[in-house]
Image 1 (spheres, rainbow, N blue to C red):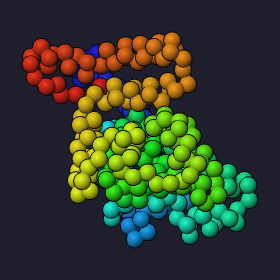
Image 2 (image 1 turned 60 degrees about the vertical axis):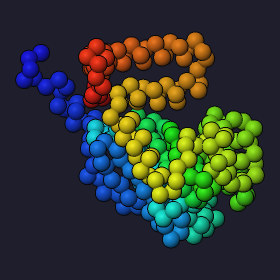
Image 3 (image 1 turned 90 degrees about the vertical axis):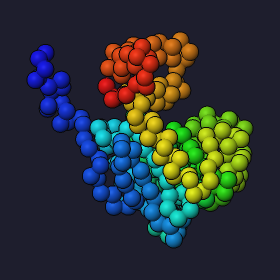
Image 4 (image 1 turned 45 degrees about the vertical axis):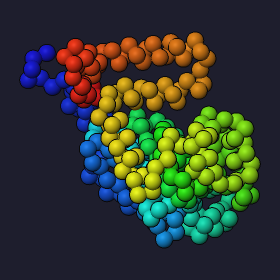
Length: 286
């Protein structure tokens, strides 16, 4: 192939690579800076509750991130010193009482599809959790890949307290894998809040930060990931997700195939030459 020929067919690129830096969110704030996209739940007067529209837009945004070429890591946070208080009592909980089974299933599938979209987008997701993190807010934090919290954060899977099962949006599958079966059972059966220090000890949080530095440190981590070997990071995330359903032999074979693909990338070559030349590699995600 000559130097003036495109490496990828433009028609293929047009159908599979999009830019999200110009996306204007309607039901939360969305910004992109240096390959890091930041979702800010922005209803601070109500501790950032979700609405039907917010659920749907979040689901669709994370779905589109699978094709984004200008976003390599994502931060999710909340405005005004709280993360998210869950579904809005007046705009979601009240209306749900008037729905029949088919419409209720439409809603619960939509909320579950948000978690699926978060787990299937290749970008690592960092949740920056301060203050209230309850219900669906706790689920969004749980569905992220990494979580930074504060000592004053209070995370509650409070479905039990409103007469619902703890098995919501994948909680019974995901939460035990993060903090263990017994601890997850306690939180899901009781709905009690888990404090920041407890969340750190239990492995829910990767790190606790001072509230005034929380977003800055979460974005610094996301920036580091976004400027790393992003193709390889995407495979790591895919393997972490897929291997929950594999035996050890299957997992080892899947990782062998994934690693062989990574060895074909320019980033692998860049890392080798940088090591030989005693400098830090500059990754480009290809």
